[in-house]
Amino acid sequence: MNEYRPKPPRKSKSQQSQPGMIKYRKYKVKNENLKNYYEVEDLLKLNIDLKKKINSLISDRNKLITEARANEENRLRLEKKCHDLMKTTADSVSSKSLDTAIKAEESLSSNLKKIIQQNRKEISILENEINEIKDDIRYTRLNEMEIEIKTFYKEILRLNRILELFNVDGDGVINFLNERSQYKRTIEELNEKLSTYEKNSKIMKENFKEISRYKEDNEILIEKFYLMRDKLENLNKNYKIATNIIENQKKEIQLHKEGIEKKEQEIESKNKKIKEQQDEYQKLIKKNKDKDKVK
Image 1 (cartoon, rainbow, N blue to C red):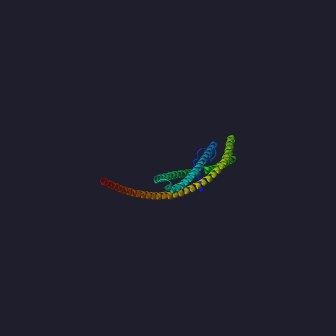
Image 2: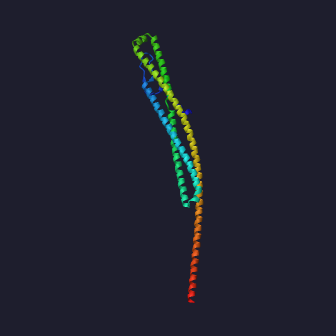
């Protein structure tokens, strides 16, 4: 399950290139190394993107569920066709002629091959979709958002320390009095952004819960997929057994056909002999009639 957790960013905090970040205003102090923070619009945009991501994952999950059901129906249909195949091959010699029985068995075997190829294609499509969902879950930005919350809180503490330095330094106090209204506005903006950031963090936690529920459903689907693959392998084995039985029956039918042809040849030869004997008998009858006329 660790593969579904979001990975931390590779770069350090000072080297992160965070989109949508703008700089604070620079105040007239010796240490003016101010960090970046998220605007409210950027946070809303990130929240909307995350919701879209969750909706797309839910739709993918629904697709997987429907495809799993369709594969289960295909499996049941294959089992039924295997049973019908065994039944028809057992009764075909007694109920039908030999030629029609061979054609029916060949059509059944070709249909089974087509169904198995179609199921293999569907299973490969399912495997590709599951791998794509795993990649999407690995690279979520939840961990990065938590790091950004911490940096935002540290930035507020740093600004408070700057304000304390202004209170200690006389020149800083004069500058602070001259720009007091400006500082008040920036502090109010920071407080508003902090409140909106907290609201967005709550929403992000709820979204993370939804993603965890989705991961559980995804694991169940993966287990069902592996069970289906095992069942398909068993079906392939049964199909091989059925094809071997059909081949053996074809050989028996061919031998039976050859025996019938030999018997027909023997009957034809006997009929020829009988015809020859009848001709000789007719000739003898004619001779006797001619003798009687002469007398």
